[in-house]
Length: 207
Image (cartoon, rainbow, N blue to C red):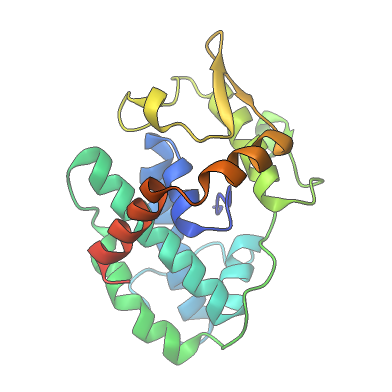
């Protein structure tokens, strides 16, 4: 159970994930959203799961936290449709959740993301990194390099779609670092292509 916060933008964070994790994180995100509603007294389609996990605690703390995760989950479904040309079953559940959340999840501003960028079994931990988005970027690079199968984006078209904060070198993914990303974002954040992708996803789901 986790939320891969590689960006504070829920769309960008969804787009960064490899094909395998796009599928996996749709289900986990939906479980976290349902758990938040259940803990606050509602009855969501999924049963409560991992209620004491830091990600679950964060998701249910405020309505703004819950909304960020819901947007992320919907954008993950959009990524799934782009990559596999079919609709994920969780999308129908996600469409029903906001009305329940508004009734049960407490109002409040978004709080700092939980840093769960660690895997004890693989000896990976970036919990000490104060920038949570950097922690998750570094964590995912390590996980991708430890995957049995090389990760893919858009089913093998990774040369066009891997996140801007990594590159391939001799078959391994290498983290580019925060300094490079600052320069990259400064020259690319306002690009019409990035804006059009976000708008397309939002328009598709009516968000």
